[in-house]
Length: 141
Ligand SMILES: [Zn+2]
Ligand SMILES: [Zn+2]
Image (cartoon, rainbow, N blue to C red; front, side):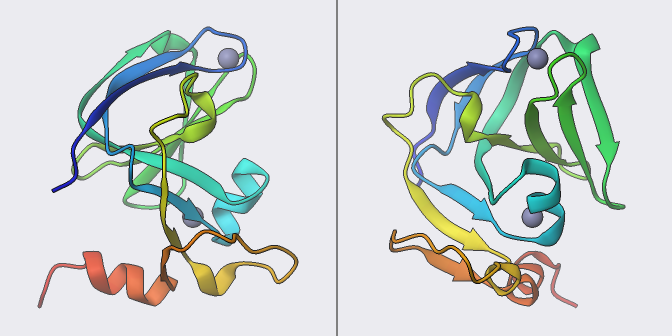
């Protein structure tokens, strides 16, 4: 269903460059405490649809924020780069990196239950609580 689109972008200082195929029309915004603490606000991401080309890899810092995911950032300028599910190597890349934003569309919001009350997006989106998100992705028992 979701058609992948080619996107390329870079961090603030330009050391790290990221390109590949992404589900551009399915941007997600995560409001969880961890994403907001890390990204400074809701973390807006596009999901990779295949292998990513990552240039400047030595400059990519990685922080294991849970048993199943790590967060990548630029060691030089501090730009937030991606959230990566280590189990299946899926990258959720920060929308802010991409030069061409014309094909991006906000599709869903996660951890809507952790969103602080002082802001709300006007976009019509599919909203999931943290519990609903884990239920959607947990393997059936
Ligand atoms: Zn940088
Ligand atoms: Zn989050």
